[in-house]
Image (cartoon, rainbow, N blue to C red; front, side, top):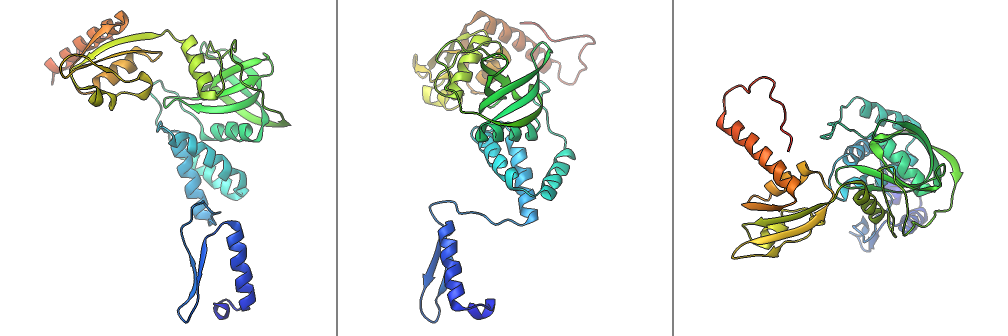
Length: 322
């Protein structure tokens, strides 16, 4: 090996020791067929990437950050923030050019999130650096904000920033798709503890507890009307539980081969109706009344659609209001 690399055996041993100090698991074996071998280890060692590999990973992470895959989106943002901190400027420009040449698929409400916004917020939160950005509220009002970012939280449908708003001297939650032109000011801060009670929110409500996810969940509960679900399913509880979102809880056995779900949530009627239908078994909704009315209207519309297969819908027929 020393001859092939045109160095001394001592240099080889010193370089191997240096690799081991960096975390690379290098095994050595003696004898005429011996040598060094890089093996899988228990910890992740540093990676050496060429330009093409670094660009490919950055683009992939940006795509993953915008997808509603539980756990993957948040991990993508953390990894992307670390990678972009060390990317040379020439590679950063290539990643941005590739990103600008692609068109993201918008969410159901038409909102999109620029991955660069996510990485700016994530880097500032990790580095404990104050942020400035423009914010658009639900009614369209635009304001300038200066905040101490605490955490980014993904709900699977949206991204939120939990932060202390210096101008309002209170805690706030911000929808990331409404954040514009964020930049780190360079001013460092010591993180404040999340309050137990009385925090505000720019999602129009909020109280906080020890972690950002709990803080956001309580904020959203105050913001949206609560739905108290009472649903019977014609299938075993294990079958239904495996097909329902975890935050709705687990149904209890009710009758022979059936189960009943009693839960509270702040999700939209449309989303709840979709999730119930996707359980793929017979079900009956006893409450709340607004969900029953919505399902009645949706069911009638779907029945007409099936009965009129192959025919043009009548002009001017808009969506029914449940």
